[in-house]
Image (cartoon, rainbow, N blue to C red):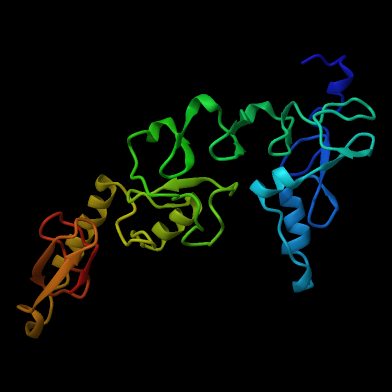
Length: 266
């Protein structure tokens, strides 16, 4: 980067807690300038006292609807562009006018995905767009994940935040459904190992085997009273869908086919 170039003045010196940039976007919904949509949503939704005035700036829609920006250096309001028409400064070292997105931090390796319709981080070379799930995934997941149509275009099953444009890390569970990493961690911390959407086990087979072994030990250490010792119940496994008849136990019922305790009575 040429520090003597006037366009490079103020690199990483302006912006908010979310982005380093040299332009404020003018929200098309309320015609007010904010450093980014997150700042807008915090002010106009999260911290807005009047329920009738609360509103959010949608990431995908706002990229096309946004028409004006305000230069962070000279304060000139102008039509959306990559550089200021007043002082000539570049609004970001990375600029995508399709998304109305500016960022001075090139370490994020931002790129625009035409299929997603938004900019993403992490480097184009490290991602592929799954047309069934309709989202960009890491190359490590190519042919290694269960496809569910538009799986990312849904709310997190725990916190209910829309996943497609969430800035929090997201993980794909073994069943193919998606969830925030922190929400998945919270489930595991509370000994919940099933997908809130389809009830299949959320961890790998190896990880779940350790959980099932712990339940084996707990069942063996907790004999049932004589009146329940020979009671049989029918179960359906949420993981392999096999049906079987097993001895009743208050702690859980183990699938005879796959060894999972993720079962329900039928």
